[in-house]
Image (cartoon, rainbow, N blue to C red; front, top):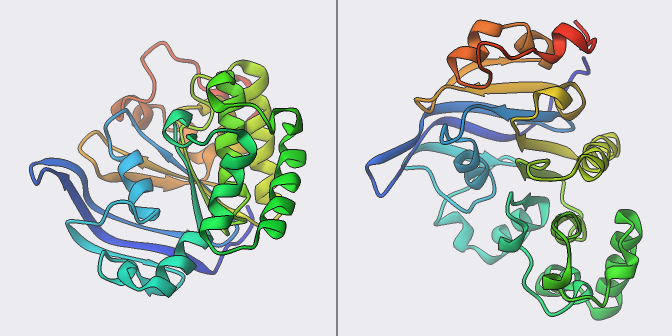
Length: 264
């Protein structure tokens, strides 16, 4: 496995509760290193999506600390316009539900929104939009309204709204959920391509079949919102009792490592 040594995102003993009574994260500590693909594994409701929102500065821990690129990320620190702009330009989040991310009149306007908000001039923003349309193979959608798109097309546009910002870190919440097999394979390949280009990837997923392609390292959450394992995909997939315990498989599940040649 490749060595990743530069710490980008660091969570230390993070706790978060919704409405101050529903625990979502309970003492979570982890480090995301530059260039790695990190998968967050666990049952629904274990805290994966909440952690992604903390990493994107959408939620702030009830206690504990989060630093990004060597700077503390807090509600107060993001009040600083320069720090906020820097952080937002370096971290991008692709939500599980594309409808939560796509809202403009046309796809072209959707992709241009972020760059224009970040202060790019219209020509530079338009150039970025065309580059991303070409990368994702959706040039024919540029003048379509988002509500006219299929689920897979919306997912590509939602990804485009993040890639057009050229962030260093990409966060994906269940990226292949509810996608048809062809689109799911395309997205898995895109994540590999982005990682090969130097992007840092953090994703929440239940897709154990593609885990060896989606991740260099896995963090496993228990249903009591704590990290219970950390290791490469092959190591995690060999631990059947662990996967049963955290409700990622059932007793009759056949793991990829048993039949697909996941590397040791």
